[in-house]
Length: 134
Image 1: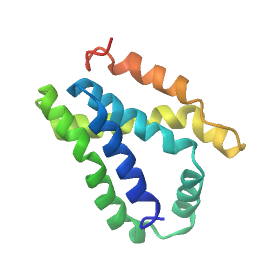
Image 2: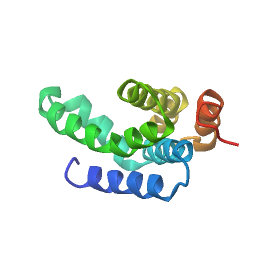
Image 3: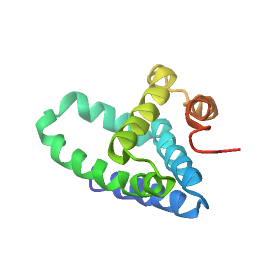
């Protein structure tokens, strides 16, 4: 899972962020790219793995992946002028996870699709002004 899925996920995030034109839009592109995996079959596999594999086995690879994944977010936050880049990056990731899980975990367990637009609308209401999105 770590070797196969995570590099693709990171490449997708990098591609989305790289295509955005302003620091705020780069942060938003990061958010959008990270909401999508919650509706994927890989997320279901990751959730199952987390339930059966000793957490200490996954801790190192997950920490490394998380650090790699956050590079474009931290760069965008720096360009945005954020004075607390590391803290804000963690908060943004936590918001994405929570917004996706608030409906997504229940829906994914029943085989449905994550309501992507609803999740993104919630996140945009929370941080759209901060990112100066239209």
